[in-house]
Image (tube, each protein chain N blue to C red):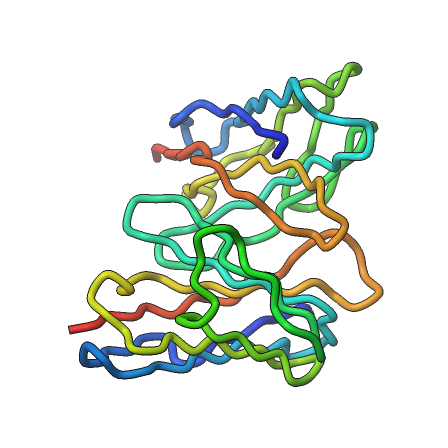
Length: 116
Length: 110
């Protein structure tokens, strides 16, 4: 149980276009989902906290107008990278906490974004 | 944010135990100690967590010092599949936000 999926797993887009990444909890309801970014050979950096039905909370230094987060249901959160540039190329990972569950978070497999 | 300190890397032989230390001297009374691991090109995986008492599960054991200023993750018999970056994280936020540090790269030698 507690599986989180992400789609797509890899995406290549041209500079200036927007890309949407989906994060789904497959077998549980997630009150809260989180989005992380990881550059090569670096650790994960928390970008934002997404709560179902409310606005996302962004970490300091993360542009909310560039990284649009929507958490429309208890099983789906989306991250849209708007007007992507090569410096946005990264590994994007989501995680979810089980609704009314314990402390542990379940992570998706990640989405590799390459902006050309 | 409460911080943790871990060695950059550790090496172990296959089928031997691995003890991964973590220092968290600024931990507060309500902070939980979490461990996650990340295999190459994958999302992190929950390993174990604890508050004050030692914890065991199918993946590992967590030994917490009496003063809670340090903890040790124990992999009882390392396998090649255990080669990963292991992160020790203090959960201080009621929403569950995890702030990842650099972690420890575990190398398992056949």
